[in-house]
Image (cartoon, rainbow over all chains, first blue to last red; front, side, top):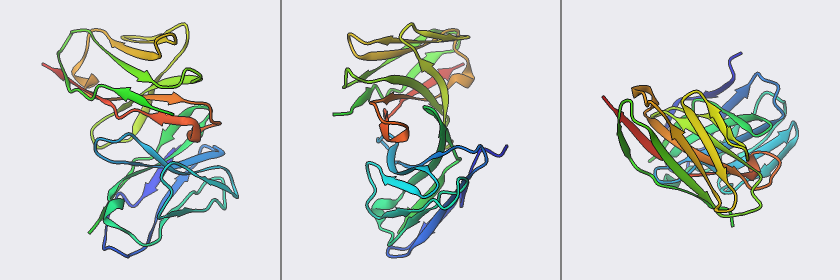
Length: 110
Length: 112
């Protein structure tokens, strides 16, 4: 089992560019979510999905889109990157209350 | 209101010592509680769940005090490898990730 995988590990974008952060899990978990982690802040939920075809907004959804066409994949799209989106992004899948996190993507927006 | 408060530290502790830190939460209706561990530049991983009756796993003990709305983590005989940030996580009642609130973490440094 690879668990939760994320690509890329690092990314630098210019303001206004768009990109997709990839997330995949092989544990057959229905629940998947995206968080961002900033210095001095706790993990904050961006979007989550309770199953294929179903997504919902978390605490900080603005500037991000998600889709869930399969159980395995849950990509996060930045529509027009802004410096405020510089952060570490974690994807997670969950069984009950336990979150299994991917290794993260470190994103810098210039 | 969903708030989870932790002392950010750092807690500098000599190897072999016992260390404890608390986490307070805002909502008395909170349902479940967890401690996660996050190593530097790594992802968080579940350390242990916190049950009403307390929970012990080797050198780690977690306690819940519902009356005072806090949970605690005690580490005995601390090891260098215990150096990490410990995140307090509270489920305020959602079905999954949407119900979880993460604290900002307590940074622990075990010194030789």
